[in-house]
Length: 300
Image 1 (cartoon, rainbow, N blue to C red):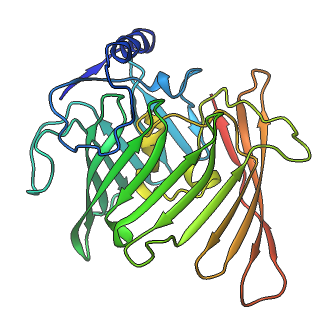
Image 2: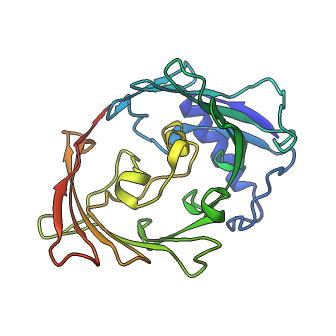
């Protein structure tokens, strides 16, 4: 696969041309970790049309002259992206023709996570080989597979960690995630389900997501672990059409969490803060527990 990098305005045009020349625009339901020699354009502006955020919470996002994210710094965690890596493989299962790498490090210790990434023709991650470096346990490896619909929205995430965990994502006609289901080898019928809402008493009309922001873990019950920073590099598909205002998560042990989200918007209707409150129900207690998460600030 040939990986191309273009400035935002030109890249968007290039992607549009590719889409027009595609005879089969149906979603690829069987991503191939070695899809061949097609050209790929990495273009974060297809995800963040108004620009990539410069900071989300404590995470500071750095871009290069081409508008590509090169580093995300969050406390002692440093995430770096290499779009033209030297092809050296220490592990036999790392794909021979990976397109890029993402590296996660914590402080000055010897622990870290390396992702060897294959991109699909939309410029999103379809396969990643993860190598965890641990000073005590040595190296361990996991694999990730992603599927997207024709509009570039993630519809499935599969990972070998967690007994081959599969996350299935359902959208409505508006382009909003309305349901998430997680299953694995031990719970093939589902071990977690989540429903997401976009209106409430204070907001009878859904809030347009003009920014493209999508916080998978924090608002949509989608557990990304160390893969999460890749979204802010424009590598994990497009955001929802509207900002989520609530979610209800239930698991197969009988626990239930109800989340309420409040967004603060600036004059351009871009989100600058997310506030989350929740109520948790346990099968072992009669009364729910109420709490709040730390607010997440967003800078543009």
